[in-house]
Image (cartoon, rainbow over all chains, first blue to last red; front, side):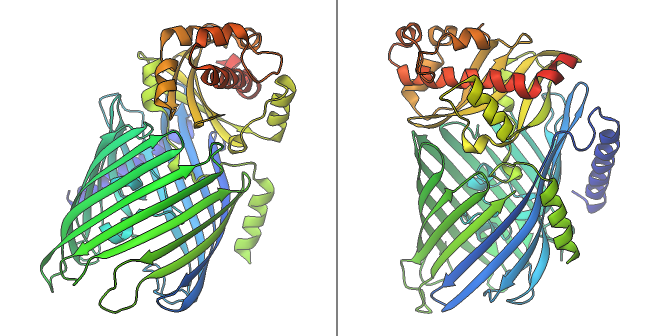
Length: 333
Length: 198
């Protein structure tokens, strides 16, 4: 899609939603959810012999726009003030190990009022529709499906066409590849798509593809994801294959797979999970194999405690196996 | 400092919220379409389930309580055919021996159960029984008072009439009955006034 056309689409949709929301029958505070979301995360990276902390405080909002004949769409906005303390390696959003920043997580509008045969249209900053993350939200949690490592970014600015149909759901996005920046950086872009069975079912199967260029690295991916739930047990997996081209090394094959076994107690208060992660990059001498075990415990409606421990099974060339222990307490008010 | 002041002000104004991030919220689109195949759109009305609501449920249905995750903002969907409402859709979770069961209730304008389907029921055997018409007939067409008469004296389990009809799924019958009662009660308490205006 040409940049001018893309910007026109975004401008048109934003104008349309802004205009229609002023005339719709509900005022802005109606159908609005919002909460304050604060968290403290303590990390101990054994391989780097480093202990760090991450503090986050933000506003999480969700608003349904309506007219007398039904819903027009909804918007999600999540703005977080995030402070690092001695955190290495420094995440891309920050400039130093003790930096602090305002971070936009999800911020998008999804227009849903079209006829049944037309897809919904989402504009904004959203999670790339790929793999398990499409139906399991991990924002602000220790649980992770490693979107960022596999695709180059977890969230990106752009546009998506999405729909839940009677037996299938799909989401196709074109994003700018600028990650936190709402623009294309040095020709960056990402076309991402996932089609799958309905995500609330006991057995979910999805197929995802990505073709993009993010941080100067061209990426191609195809992935299969699945979820199977039986009573309080869940068995999940994602298998992605593809290649990266960072210009210095040329195209390099990459394989990534994750298998998760989880157990939720019957009142949903405690969730335990164990993951096996396999990542094979052709340029590396050996494939990374990691095990991640964790839990989240919902102490009350507001408080959640979670812990996780990652341990690398294989010995990398550096000789330092990855070992990471994390604890997080989260409060939503 | 300015940020902290703003956040403090927001805390004082804020109400109970969901424990999960809002970006994970999804409308039960396919279930609404299944329950109201002729609908052209749905209209959402979001209301707050708070401690006061919880207390009202405890008074109306002694020995029953709302799950802690229910405190917060919840949506009632009105199935629309053009500008006319066809009925309401209320999604609720109820605890069972096999985890939380999520039931999507279709409620008519007289607040009677007109149909229901399962968004999540992770017991394949029970789900199969629950989707059967014999089982559904126990609940369909009944309002809150009629359903309340199906409770046994302990106030949480179904009476003999229901259990006989449920055959191999007594626990499922208990779960569905409790969920139906709470759904109709909450619909009346939280959305009753607004629905009368439609």
